[in-house]
Amino acid sequence: MGTENVLRNLQLVDGRRVDIAIRDGVITAIAPPGQTDGECGLDCSGLYVSSGWIDLHVHAVPELHPYGDDIDEIGVKQGVTTLVDAGSCGSDRIGAFYTESLKAATKVFALLNISRIGLERIDELSQLEWIDRTKTLAAAAAYPEFIVGLKARISQSVVKDSGIQPLKLARRLSEETALPLMVHIGSAPPAISEVLELLRPGDVITHYLNGKSNNLFHADGTPLQGLLDAAARGVHLDVGHGTASFSFRIAEQAKQAGIALNTISTDIYRGNRLDGPVYSMSNVLTKFLCLGYSLEEVIRAVTSSAAEWLGKPELGYIRVGQQANLTLFALKAGEKQLKDSEGDVRVAQHYIEAKGVFANGSLITG
Image (tube, rainbow, N blue to C red; front, side, top):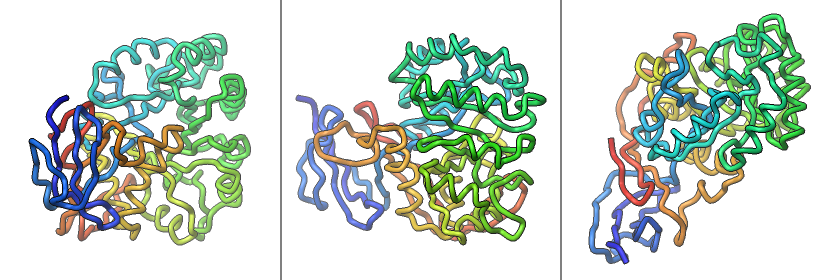
């Protein structure tokens, strides 16, 4: 048996304080402070702990430009123990990405782009012949534990003259593979109403808080009936902040309308990590604290809610007997300026800062 490590004096988001004992990467005890013995103890006073953060929308293929980055730079170094690459790869290169993902400290899943070329171009759905049914079905069958859904970017700059047809083809591929769709929404055409009609329970709308004219809210701030209907039938709403897809104004409208906060994701890649407005998962989470969501609601949106969509609920909880999959973070007092995708600024009075993860049997910081 290996050495038992104890992370002492941690705080759960519900306010309870605990020590967590870990041996050989497995949680052996969760107890009130001081009630757990262990050979090696680390004082974590002042830090919160949650199950490992899950980012449901990233771009983690470093050689792709502009939408690419290194897995661990946007994973464990951000406090994110599990990430989902959101369609960087189609069938042409998903195998190479799978092989590369195995080298990372971060756990990686992928959404398969319905275009075989993926994000080698940013108009990957402008030519319908790039949607290769045979290759898509073969890729989904070859990597069933890695590929968790299909990705279709349905906005004018991506589909060009193809209109709604790529999404109709994506719907058929979803049915044939039994995989859900994540649909990127943005500028029209196609109109957002056409997109919403094609979504089914378990599908994901990403960028649902974007401030573009083709968004999910009327001019008076009330939600479109199509959005309400989609949410009622089980379509999942994902933030997907990104460079151009998060508006404080729209997020305030969504909160006022009682639209449920499902998952918070970053749509992070090298450009918006280094130059903003994303910067980090911590920064995006802080924006939702600033909007008035509780710490519990915010953390749930990157832990249990994301894990449930993935069909891997064990990733969203901290339990004795399971592999330690933890994020350590601080909630700090102090002003922090936050900018959305439209240049709108809010000032937070408290902010979240990731401090490390416990994953793969060891504590990783920085």
